[in-house]
Each structure stands twice: as C-alpha cells, then as structure tokens.
Length: 78
Image (cartoon, rainbow, N blue to C red; front, side, top):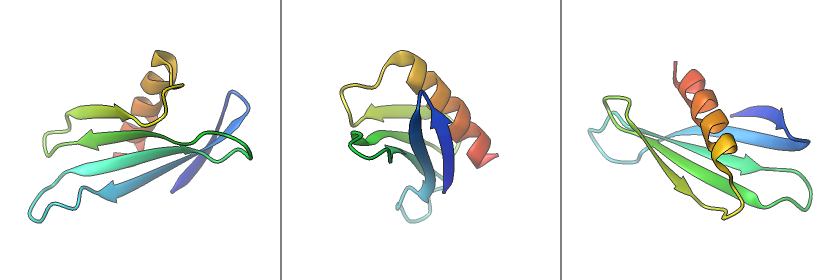
C-alpha cells in the first residue's frame, strides 16, 4: 500500500494477488481516500506477461488519471 497526492486528493494504491491459484497475475486497486471523495476508483489487472486491463469503478475517472495510475501501478510492481 502506497499513498500519493494527485489533484488535491489522497490516493491509495494497493497491489494484490489476482486470487487465481497458479496465476502470476496481479490486481492494483486505486482509491481516493480524501474525506467526502468517491472512494474506490480503479482496478488494474496485470496478467503474467504484464499486460494491463483497467476497470473504472468510479465514473468520474478521466483518461489522464488512468494513465497516471497505470504508471504508478507499473512502478509498484517493479
């Protein structure tokens, strides 16, 4: 779990196993922990080859934020 500041928001990035036995995949959850914020924002799924799929949990997430979150997620997995 790591914390970041982005656009005045406190962002939590957590790396989790994908929960699939025998898999080498990961899920990165991205949350806005700012009081009154939207909470859970994204799930970024990485397969065993490092390919990413993004699920937007909050409708308010824009493309710039997704690109930033992907960059952070990759650095967290490195």
